[in-house]
Image 1 (cartoon, rainbow, N blue to C red):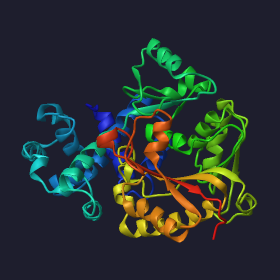
Image 2: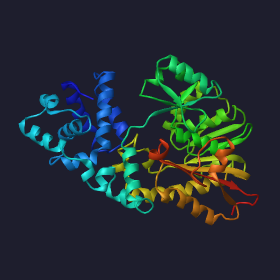
Image 3: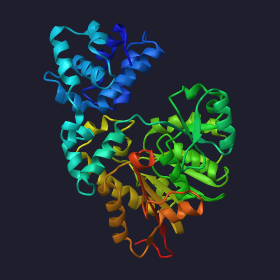
Image 4: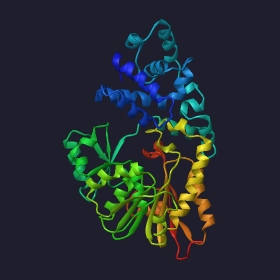
Length: 423
C-alpha cells in the first residue's frame, strides 16, 4: 500500500475523523466519505485499508510515537506495516521524522509486552488470562490483527454451492468451499461482490462461516415456527428460511427499525415467502408474549462485546470496557430468559455471541440452566453438527477462534426445553 500525496493527505483527514472513536469506525469512515464526495472509489479503498490497519496496530504504533498525531501514526504505520523505506516516504517527511522513522523501523514487536504484541488493552489481557495461557493470547491477538476473508453463503433456495463456485471461478474470482459450512464460499481478495449478478439475483449473501454454522445448530425443519430473536439485518434469518425451503414461518424480531429496513432488499432478493420481520420495543413486547409456548426453534444472537470480530472491527478494543461488558451481561441474561419462554415443549434454543469471554458465554448459559434446571437441558453442539456431516468438534459448546478455525471468534450453546412447564 503506497499512497499518493493526495491519498496521504486525505488519509490523515480520515484518521482525524475516526480516531476519537465516538461511534463505530466504519460508520465514521462512511460519514467522512459522504462529506468528501470527490474521493474516488479506488482512493476510498486505499484510505479505508490504511485507517483500519492503523486501528489493528494502534497499541504498538502509539508506543513508537512520542507525540501521537494522525500524521505520526500514518508515518509509523507505513514504515512498520507497509514496508515503505525512507526514500519512498521522502515526499511526506522532514529530517527529524526521517531519523525517527529509521529508529522505529529497527524496533521489533517481539521485544514488547504481551499487551503490545497481542494488540489487546490491559483490561482485556487480564480477562483472557483467566482462561488462556500467554502464548494462546498472543496467537489469538496475532490472528485478530489480520483482515478477515470475505465469506459468502449460497442461498440454497436458488442455487447450489458447486454451481456458484464454478460461476465465480469463470468470472476470474478465486473462490473455494469453506471447511465447515456446506453452503459457504471463501473468496481470495475483496472483489466488489455487491454488484455481481450472483448477488443481485439473491443466489449469494455475505456471511461469515461462523455465523452460517449457527443455522445448522438450530437445524429448523420445514413447516416449523421459528424466531430469530435479535435479527439485526436478517442474515441468519434468511439462512434459516432457506434451510426450511421457505415453508413454515420465521419471525425476525429486532428493536431497530433501521436494521430491519436493511433486511427488506435482502428478503426481496432471497425468494423467501416465510420470513416476517417485526420491530419490537423490548424483550417484553406484546408481540413476543403472544407467541409464548408456541415456537419450535429460537435463535438468540445476543448483543455482545463483539470481541471475536476484531479482524473486522478493531475499534471495539477501545469502545468496550469492563463496565460495558457488565452491562451487556445483564442484557444477555434478560434476553435469554425472555426468548426461552417462546419455546414449546421439546423445542430448541441456540444462544450465540461473537464474544471470546466466558462471562458473556458459558457463564450466562450455566446461570440460566441453574435457574431453569427442571425445564431445560443442554445439548451437545458437536453431536448436532456431526449428525449433519459437519466436521467440527469443540465439545458441548461451539467455540470458534480465528487462529484455530479461520472464522470470527464465536460461541454458541444449544438448549432444549423439556416437557415441563417453565418456572
